[in-house]
Image (cartoon, rainbow, N blue to C red; front, side, top):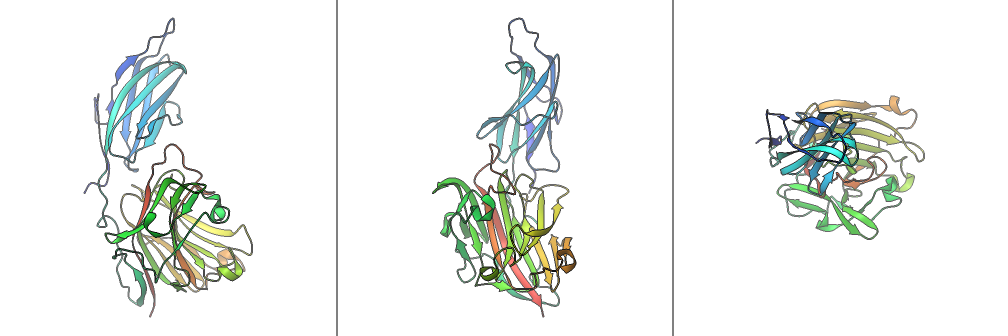
Length: 370
């Protein structure tokens, strides 16, 4: 199945070079720009991204206007260039304008067709259900029709100070924003009102039910994207109720900001008081993004060492050498899965953000040495 969008265009003179259907708007006694030439290019590394440029004679500046399902938008120009990343299949109009002034311009109009293939559980990387020298001590394959109440609990509400991060969503319980079906868990962030919140989502935890000290953790998931979208697969120290955060420690197995859909972070937080001290490293895909298919986010967690992996590629390690005299990561931890909306790290959604956004989790598996 084709994992990348297919593009075609009207008024095309070459695969990625488009000569426009030029329309010049006459303005009394003003010499409008002439000889408009524009290009549209499909990105080979980011699904849905269109790069556009325009040149003309007698232009003072340029603008490029992209049609979206929510109306037209004008991204910030980089000289005579701009780009937009689409998330929907369909025909979209793009307007290229060469300006004398804000209200006086010549315009070329073109169209582009974008088609996305369907992503299934068969797309992407998989890890085995056993490893030499390890026992599988817990797994949730999400093969049923409801969340396993023996493993998971919903956290509900706005949280204190937006869950400590000025987040904008309200977390629901039940199946409003988290559904188990078709062999996966789907957490959905929606643009809808709930109390004083304008967005809803879900946050699931294993606290007091499934808590672990050391082992290999594999989580296979497909991530959401968009400005202000903040998915995370992470852990907190089980003693948080007595020592509070960040003294309990935090292990972010995978954290991402949706406006950079080809990047994830592996991070550890610790410290005696807020704000935390942290150690983080980024993993960036060389092509595509984390919405294209399923990826496996892993840690190998031993006494005095944690290693982070994406699809079995190690990209980060911490030990007590990295944390000074404070190292809470030799204690039991529990899991948290959630999509936040807005907050300190990603910023708020904007006009480019498409809702709903989903994070799909195929499985979580915890292995410990025999």
